[in-house]
Length: 217
Image (cartoon, one colour):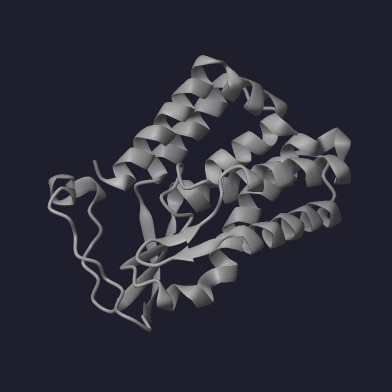
């Protein structure tokens, strides 16, 4: 089974488990969302994860294209486009546009100070940047639990009363900035046909980082 399909199935099973145990309801209730709004956000995230909006193209420094295994050919949905020496930089709707929009909504509807919010995002971004690593032919890898844990701890220290929305904003924007924007300089050497800000969308760590950070906060 292709690794990307295996990761997709594992992440989907994880989300289903959260739903079964009611943890998604708990997390979004902390953020002031009704169950209907929470699942609407989840659906938008899942649907948007399949949409990448192209931004610009970069010439890659090295040709790191790898031969595709015959087994991967049987899974066209998870088959990357051929690498031609250029990397298309895109932004993922489910993994970037949706969480950024929701973070702005939380900032507008919560008594969060702009200074504390900015500080939380900056601190989480620095942590994520330090622990993230370029993976040739793939993208930027981030250990899954460190980012939400850092977001939860930082949010609790900065604003205990509003730690849930602050953890979500710090966690999601921190991953996007620390792992994607701050590592744009590493894209040329990845040898990947597409580098998507927000990764694979809901399952790249952005959505799960925000959700887990809220649960931990």
